[in-house]
Image 1 (tube, rainbow, N blue to C red):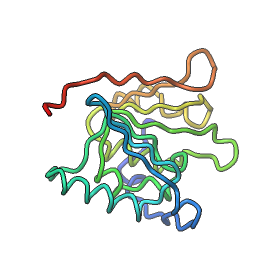
Image 2 (image 1 turned 90 degrees about the horizontal axis):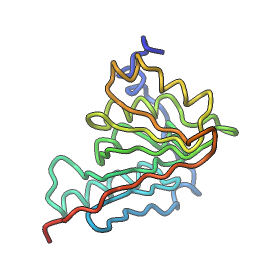
Image 3 (image 1 turned 180 degrees about the vertical axis):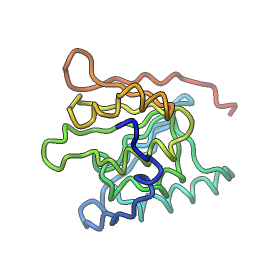
Amino acid sequence: MSGLDLKALAAKVTATDGSIANGSSISILLEHRGASVLLSADAVPTVTVPTLQALARQRRLPGGLSVDAIKLSHHGSRANVTSELLKAVRADHYIFSTNNAIFNHPDDEAVARVLVHGGRQPTMWFNYATRRNQRWAEPALRAKHGYQVRYPANGRSGVVIALPARTTGE
């Protein structure tokens, strides 16, 4: 995979999620003691992106919103994790919640979009270590693109991400 063209993969045109059920999904931006997490459920980018852009404008953040972590929408589906979404909000930590047993998520395009548009040195977290997502831990690929990956300890499922409290100046 080290020869993979991430920019081309991230730029691949894919359909966006048009599901009514996912379109009514509830996303939450949680901010506490200076730490922030976007929990995007199965939200669709046509709803999430304008909302995040409006919040960035309201907060006078011309570069878009920055959060500590994002639980990516719909298990890292290419139809939900778009380049536009990742330009509207950036994070240090990107969380993929899936065992990829049914729909084979996360999609490669979604992972590539995180790596291309997700800021400098992002860390990707997977709550299951699977053959499909462990491909992204290839040392040559990580060194070439400057990112980290984290998996559950000792073949278990689930991860814990500790976000430090910070003063916000308010």
